Length: 150
Image 1 (cartoon, one colour):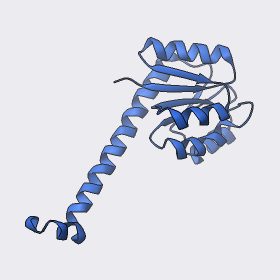
Image 2 (cartoon, helix red, strand yellow):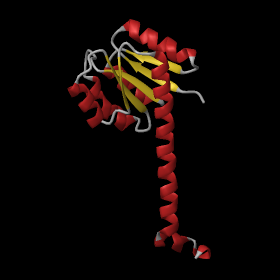
Image 3 (cartoon, helix red, strand yellow):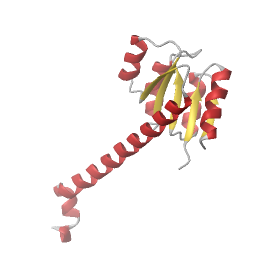
Image 4 (cartoon, one colour):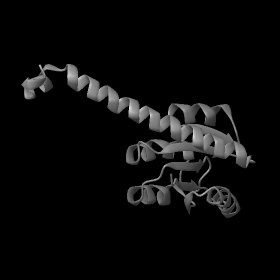
């Protein structure tokens, strides 16, 4: 499976390093340096995962989370920070980040986290679809449309 990743970080060295790690594992990677670029890219391209720095020049990464959730609800969003704090962690959880990782990043742990979170998100959506199908079968209006199934 090809995984599309977006890296949102204002530091070029970090963007390049994370990009190299992900590309070495077969990911297709795009990088941007601020929240506005991230929003514009997400409107055009479907990403499976986004690595979002907390301190961006135009917006806090935690404030970017709800906007990206609105545009790409199935995308895994991981907050990346070199300045961990209780406030950042709490806001990340409250804004529905799927993961939180601290710089310097261990590539193996990052790759394991991304793989696990993508699988969890896929399972969540598969479960949701199966629940909808189950609800259709037990809802009278749907049975009425197919009386041969009564």
